[in-house]
Length: 385
Image 1 (tube, rainbow, N blue to C red):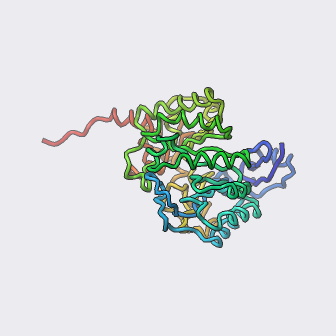
Image 2: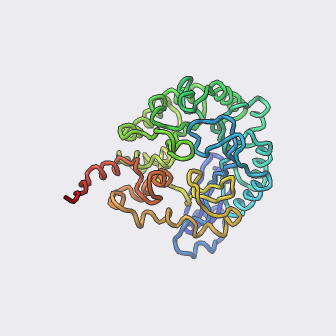
Image 3: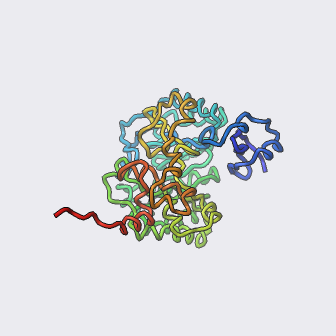
């Protein structure tokens, strides 16, 4: 076990291991045994984390691909953070004790200063990870990508399924990018958006992960935000119930690592898995404004990259303790059927971005099978005669 860095929290601290790669929550005694001094945080009452562990830095809304469901509504002329703005934000995140940043867009590889930003992140002690479509990536660029930690290429289907999901024939470019990146580093995987139309093709994506010897397949729930708000691509109730069994089957059939993003939590917990089984797939409820935050290219500090309103990114440290209080407090104020659900503290009511897209930020996630069953049982209003 090799410790890369750590930071104190009220409960003890968070320790980042470089070998094996992991973030561990440890108690105060373990922090002492690792050689870290007493922290003033240990005298404070329980509260939010002192900082997020990961921040999604949306470098731009700039991308030439024009994917039909792009959640940031990227265009060739979209807004972008300058190198100076991005580095200033990284400086502040480093001072807060953030461990990782996920650099993306838009298409981050279209920015001339991407690698300078990644190198600055390394210099201030933050691991830069990258999400990319892989379009236009060549051997020279792949070699430069060694500066990143994890790199995931967006692949929502194989062959014609990619075209159907994204609206253009980009699969050959994505597969080439995966091969080039895998030739220079081990930490290469796939991000796959699971939508109504892509659902049946996820097995083919898993086979691709296995064939190319990639290190993970991360399944991301389709969310009706950005250009996606104009598409009828949210999972059907039947697909939502099949999601968890499908993910388990992919692991055992293909012997690959499958991760589920936090928005899938309601669909997983409907099956009543053990906490250990859920943890194996990295399943926890909405972590926006808790372990996760985002900075948008217009300068907003948001709970996650799918939420549009937030705080001024020039005051990250000042705003963090009290920002996102409504999201953090959902468990205390949850309405039914969340309030009586045994998984409330793990699920946290599902995805706040999906709830907002359908009504209000603090509504129960409408994609949750339990919520759908609860609403189906409600009596219809009696109309006055």
